[in-house]
Length: 432
Ligand SMILES: NC(=O)c1ccc[n+]([C@@H]2O[C@H](COP(=O)([O-])OP(=O)(O)OC[C@H]3O[C@@H](n4cnc5c(N)ncnc54)[C@H](O)[C@@H]3O)[C@@H](O)[C@H]2O)c1
Image (cartoon, rainbow, N blue to C red; front, side, top):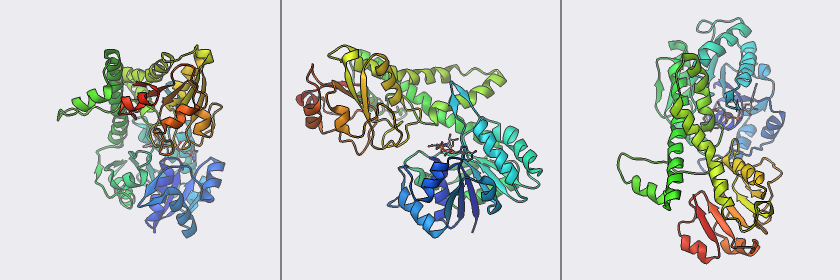
């Protein structure tokens, strides 16, 4: 039975910890968030993950009951009992600058608790070169041990999408490299407990770190392209979703789906992990930064679609925003474009009431029922799909909404395929 210590119990760390626990490992999860640790030990999590018909809440309670998972805040204590340490603490980005402090702090703790023979496996998304140039010296300094001689060190990128975490830990091909062959072999043995898909062993940790950042940026750039296409199609009076459907009949074309922007922790941050290294190496990232800007402009574009449909002056307008999550069917609203759309509308003077039953975070514009959001609103803007929001209940929404002008819907998610059905219900429909 392997003893695993998981640092960071967020969207990646918790389901990964439980994936090891379900497969017979004894897992101690460490997080500095006292409330989170307390909730987890009481079997509470707000994440939306499932595995083989069970919810993450059920899995958490089962593993707690079996004694194969527990959460604590004391990293040093956790490490006394474990010899496999996995780090999933991320690098936040503020004002276009990455802040590596949380990762450094966690590595200091790991270094202090490190014992001879331990394996440290980094799974956070990092600035290329971080594991060798920043993490390894911290671990060596804090522990007085030598990487490769006294302990093993490896990097493996994490590729899961929230909502599919359990399945993708198991079935998504992974990439891995250690500081030496033994570290790679140790990490491979550990990862293979959960990952059944092929695990590519790369020639260096830098290759895996860089590939991960580029994987994320490639999605950001591809989405920027279709978001720009959406703006063009709109000006042409064409339905972008139909245009994409037609374009994708070409066997070598695979356009992604446009939307109100690109949110979450991973994609918007990615280029700012490449940027510090690119500046150091004097390499320009013009295309990548332009793509980021295109995606950042989308919330303003969506807000303008709302504003141009207002039947009253913006400072008298009431808008219902449905869906706050950073993507469909998610509870994660970090860096969500929905918040940015709302900010633009508020700055223009509108009163916005937002509803998203999946998102646990509180905001002064967030209400608890769809009725509160829609009541007396002049228009609805749809920003994320959620199973608990019935977007087809248009008769109900129509009854609740203001009749000062024609009630309107701005649909950024292509929910309404049949425009005439929506207009027959009394709405003006504006698609992306
Ligand atoms: N969310 C995703 O879908 C996803 C997918 C692939 C990769 N990643 C990467 O995985 C990493 C984690 O992402 P996430 O979404 O799980 O982040 P998260 O914010 O949900 O979780 C990180 C956790 O680390 C904790 N933490 C911070 N400092 C700590 C410390 N010193 N000791 C212990 N815990 C500490 C935080 O309290 C938080 O609970 C990031 O590098 C991210 O880029 C995320």
